[in-house]
Length: 251
Image (cartoon, rainbow, N blue to C red; front, side):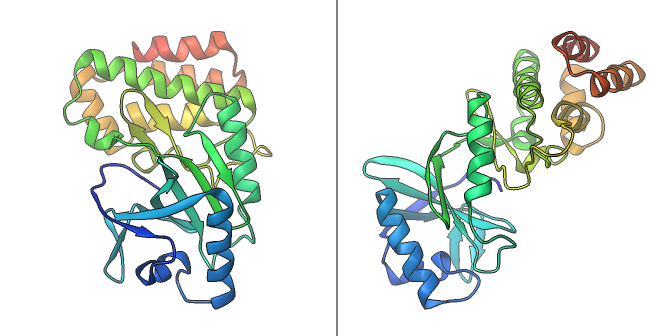
């Protein structure tokens, strides 16, 4: 669920009537709405700023996924991204996602988690461009350093035993700013085999619209060599095998 490239305007008190369909989405449930308001207050959230490319009955928000909506919010004077669990989400709380997000943060990956409740996750707001948009104007040096940083973060997740689960769709899950930021751990798991580096490397360099743009900047890598390095890495996710992946990609 992307937070990037967003223009924000109205800043509303959390109890503003305009926010009701956002806080209780996709249908209004009085008890759920009241619970979410109480939880926002417990986290110190004072206001929400409307804006984004996703429209909910005319109300713009930063993002929408299967589990929740993302809005820009304020905790005192601090700006954060606030994920609000949908009424119809396939999980009863945000506890597991918070656990996984903490694991990512412990590995040095993802926006910093600021706090959470049953229905809310508050985190650092990742401000920047999608990797697809960024690749339109990236220089050769930037393309090398930034894609390497993405893969280094993926390797850190692999070493931590945390599989993101959505990194074959990088355009929705990586924000490019001064440094890349991997977001959205709602599909992550510590129970399945990790494949962060292999999924991201294929998406960036081999089989996607992002890869098409990166190839125009850096040139096409030797596909057989890259595939061979990724296969070796999949079997043995060591620093040495990861270095071989980077070498095969010339980054």
